[in-house]
Length: 216
Image (cartoon, rainbow, N blue to C red; front, top):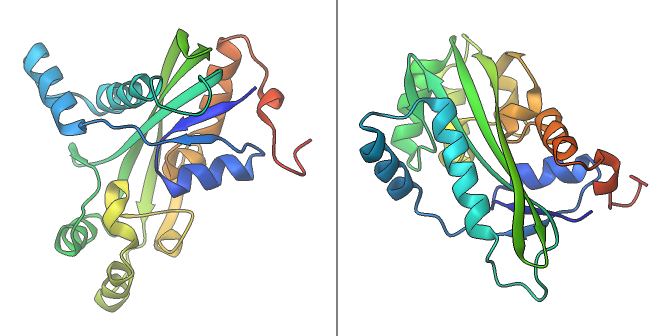
């Protein structure tokens, strides 16, 4: 069973590879701000974190169905999205060093929640069929002894600028996280246990996705 990943996240790709899956990557051309703005205008209120990440995961997956590949898509297509919430405020990617620093100054020594949305579509010869979504969450607690020099050095690497919440658990940011409550892969941006449940809900077995050397 082929898995298509509608994401450009290196962390999600590495996570799947470590789990024995080599997905076909598709860059989802989605204007996330527009999708959120239109949905919020339609419902008349700001979106809750769980609703937001599932909405964007679905938008990415549905957009990727029509991707131009050498052959029509046949298999399972996954879209994903993540946000970090602290004090009720939703944080995506900071994009700038200043924004990353401001976030870390608020979150060091504290606990927030990382939400990861998943949307899985069954596709046959390019035609989408059944689809299912789910959201996973995990609480993340940050070190309270992270000093300004360490923070400056971390931000200078550029890593926190392009990840939800301005931190990683699978790379340079890991030493600054003291505990996680929930599935650790959720914090990476894709909950493997959640994805397994979605795959089985569509009538497929997880081992059929294994296609990397050593996984068979």
